[in-house]
Amino acid sequence: MLNQLAQSLRAAGGTAFEYIVAKILNSFLLEDDIVVTRAREASLSRLIHNQSNLYQIMDFTRVPVKRRCDQSQLQDYPDLDLFALVRPSQFGELWRLLAIINCKVSFHARHTEAAFWGLLIRLSSNIPFVVVTEDRDIYTPKASELGRSCEDSTETRRILESFSDRVYLVKRYTNENDPKLDKDISIKQNNLKQGILSSVVFDDVNIPYHTQYCHSVRPIDDLIDDLRHWKAEIPK
Image 1 (tube, rainbow, N blue to C red):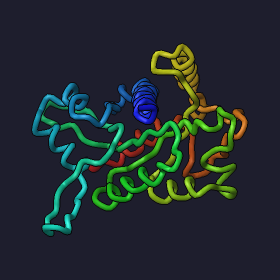
Image 2: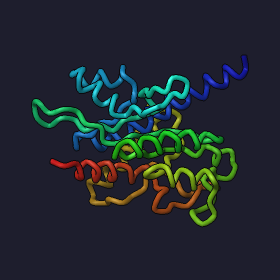
Image 3: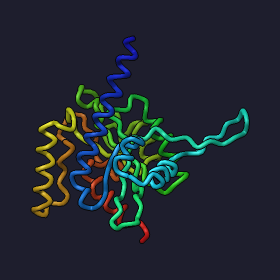
Image 4: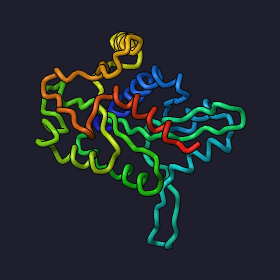
């Protein structure tokens, strides 16, 4: 009973974290026709009214699973959290999957799960697969699950760096309606208006035990620019 309760609380916390990540990204990317939403049919159907287009996107992320018992191959839908989608700019165009965003408040040995799906998706498609984490242990306080730095790293960090395109860090917010989150969004928007393009607002390196950034581990602020960059690389 207690295990079920703990599992339910973790699931609720994970869902809240997905909404936080989506709100941060959508606050800056909607004007670029990039929409971040949960990778669930119900959420996708509220955006994509063309059912054929909807299932095309979902089918594209399915991965081949071979069954030894009858030597058949199935297509399974991975355990995904968020999709970054490109919204059609003209009538007749289709929605397009831009990136897959795996959200983890913390890992606690579940980094192999993210790495597993990341590997399968990267082998079967050219879609970027990224991980966003709060790295919650640093608030306990404990050591970061990613280690102190790239040089002084943990197995978790090394595996995620190997099997995802990037890992992004975001500081703790209670939920998507947290006044601190709304304040940070306003700060970031004002910074951009003033031409301050590289400010880090949605992460806090001053938190004790916060890991150091490197090429593969970045603040979530960088994901905003990365998604724009990946969209620009789509063949016309």
